[in-house]
Length: 268
Image (cartoon, rainbow, N blue to C red; front, side, top):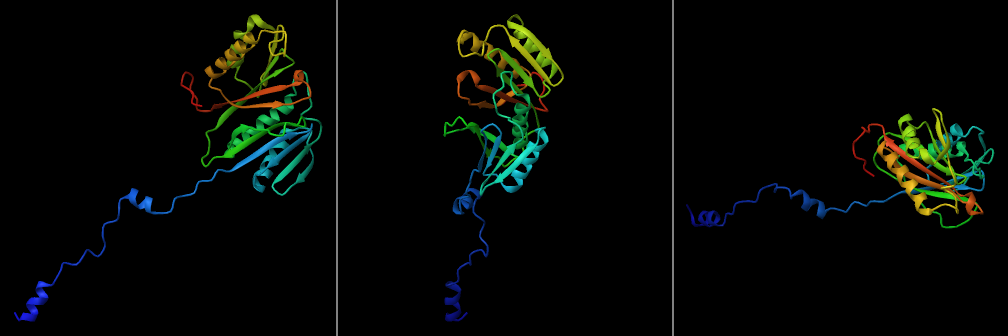
């Protein structure tokens, strides 16, 4: 071997592998751009005595909500006022005016709106109303979920006139029976039909005065315990603000997963 060949041989270095092993997954993720997460919010407000305002929904979503209102408000829609990022629906008749016995059609309309939005992936975030205007009955803020929520059954429980309680939207017969049995000594009369359960209490447990506050709260807690034993969890509370405290309306909306099995725990 010549001197030149020996030098070339001694200077030879093993080449690096043509394709190095890829970095670990965690290292690769850390080195890449951080994904940006962004929440999307929208709201529904009930205004005056006959208005529903949809704010920050897409056109397709507002069209779907419009159809829910049209289907579930028997008197129909009077007018629609489009805005840049909103839409106001004016109902025929006065859906939100005060009714001493509770306006069932209006309660069911709100229940079906909540149910439809839930099925569209819009989950209730919180009731948030900052204007304190009497004309704004309530304002519900929704947050859009990326996953499809499980199918549920829905009922509402409302309190009226200081002494009345209603369970609407076809409550299960065993639930209605247990609610009545729980309060039987405090009930003046009750009425059960396939679509609703109506209870009139002795005295005025939901009134602003004249009844022990502790007893009122104990009744509420007992009611919630019975409802949860039947698989229903509280989803929303809607209110309607009026000019005097005796006219306030409180409605609780509950949901139960369709695959719920009696005796299994509930997750909120």
